[in-house]
Length: 298
Image (cartoon, rainbow, N blue to C red; front, top):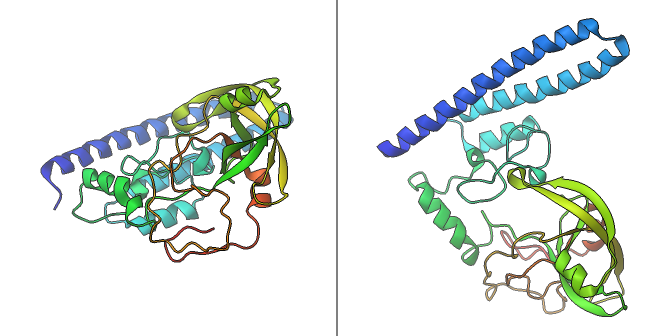
């Protein structure tokens, strides 16, 4: 049975969430009344756009209200919660906006720090506390790859400076990202020409990154004649070190006849460049090798 302090905390959070839902309902009702007044004074061509916006707002609100109510039911299993979120086409991180969790601006799971809502966090054990789950998540990668930790696709490639000389850079492949990114430090070291821009990119926890420049880069494989030209937005940093902890691979059966795109994929390192969805599948081609259940795919 949960401890008394845990029950109190759960009750408090449930009350807070219910208060937020009540306030949302009030805002929604006020919104609907204002919209009706606007419609009575607006021409038909303007109304068409208003109807579309109102329908989208209502749909998102109803989905969020319904799924959150379901989540408050302690008897609903994790699998059922995940299935419900997928059925309603909701973000698995904020449970509201219809977008990929990769681009969600809400915070990550409080238990494992991964990009999903805490209400969707897999149960480690019925008797494990949140503290135990956090410890489990931080050490999991050294014991078993399958589970809470997912290794992202990384590549070591040649990148060419302004004079045409080749340098090695660490790249992250992300098919959930539309643009490509490169660090300002790499651009400066390679003396690449920058093109002024002025855009803002929303990130996790509503952090806004102001992008002031972009540049064109040329990449080449370290193993064959594959090469790529990219237009990248310039950022001070792209992400933290990947992987965030060293992964033990001594027991893995890696094929001897395969040249890994990132020979040190298991060792934490700074990411210099992110390659987005437009070029992802040009790099991840046929010939995928499965190492086994719960193991990475090469």
